[in-house]
Image 1 (tube, rainbow, N blue to C red):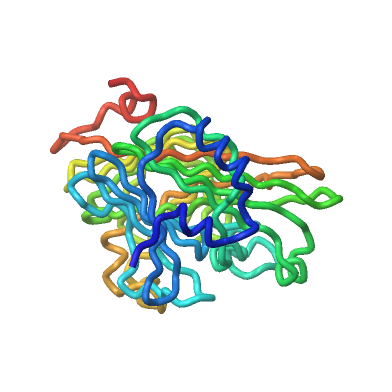
Image 2: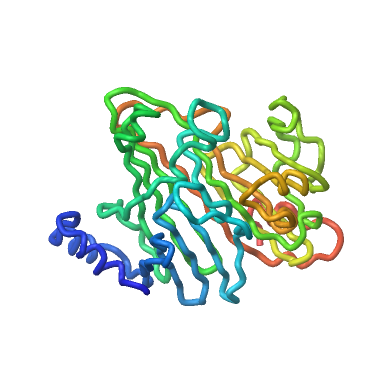
Length: 337
């Protein structure tokens, strides 16, 4: 059952100023339709579409993108076959948000609390930059009394998700609404759907330093020309370039990951033994997934009162039609077409 987003906002009486909303509506470019669907499991799902036929689905729970399909209706994001869709559990797959902590690098629960909180539609987002044939949604998470007990800092975390032809863009923003400074980590965990993990390579991280989470977070320097996978893999690459390429040989498809404001990159695949140990991951799921995350981990962001941090991530797909040999990395990493 779907309900247009406008009527849903009207239903939230007192949350929207009709006068200011009408002004903003006239100033914004024409956007594509967006629907809010109430799932049978109680989760609110926002569906974005655009003219070529691609789509994206975003949950208010966790502010999490859980689906991105291309114009051929092929799913581009991985979702675990055993994903737990019932709060307060985190959902394994799509693009979860880790805030204000990554992993166990702090006193909070694993990966922080943003991914298992109920977000809201942002009734007063920043103006959209002029663009046609795209569909966007603005979400917001504010600190609650419950959050302040475990992390005593007042904040506003905003996320804009924008769908356009062949591209998915996420723009996170964190604002300090407290009277004292605080620091935080941030990660967009991108679960990419791949044909066969043993046929995938990642380019753009060669020669970089990384923390190896499978080796007591020791620091090493990447020696390989490209990253390939034949076992469990969990590394945090540091001072990474703005573009990273995830090349799927079998599907002859390359994901281009472009990021700004998030200098680190996490690369993870659990492989067979770890997959069997994770309750919310199917035993064979590791074969069709790869996480390459945009992250701020090594040097946390510090915000003074009323300061704001902004990041940006764009994922696009290009055809990589090679059966053997290298794809010209300049074309993938620097956009030379």
